[in-house]
Image 1 (cartoon, rainbow, N blue to C red):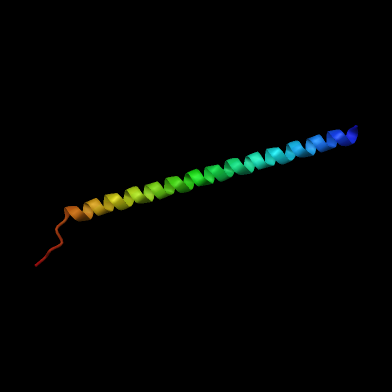
Image 2: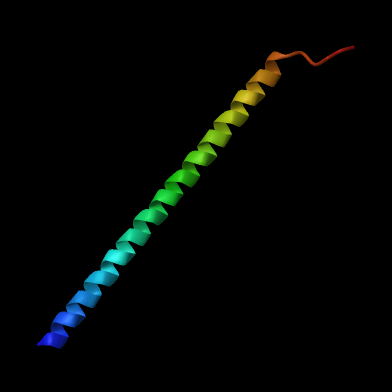
Length: 58
């Protein structure tokens, strides 16, 4: 009977660890997606600013 309890506790700990890992992985993916979006928005802003200027110094 005590071995059954130990087995149940071990599986619970493993599940908790995997939950923590998956939540941190999803948080990292969210941060990566946010960084990519911010970089894209910055690129679009810079492109718009450069289009506003006339660089034809003839």
